[in-house]
Image (cartoon, rainbow, N blue to C red; front, side, top):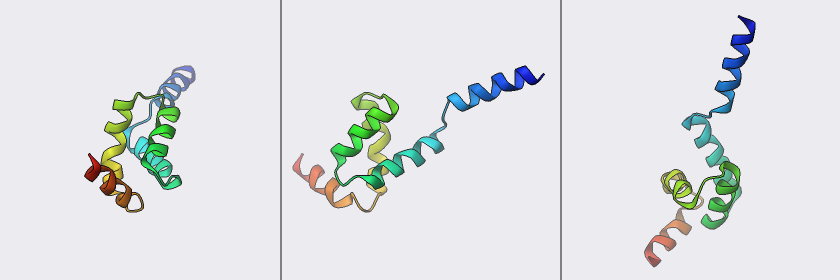
Length: 78
């Protein structure tokens, strides 16, 4: 029984849920002043491609106050 529990614990620790991912993303966002820096660190941390990174980060960036002026300038330039 103990061996089975250790195997389950390993599987649970391997997979992060979205709450944990969002917490990590918010910490990354808080460390950077530009959106490009946020994307670069997220891609490196999670080994995601660009579309995965944007899909996860963009909704959080819209709610994050310190990068909001940067996002507004970026979206108006498009």
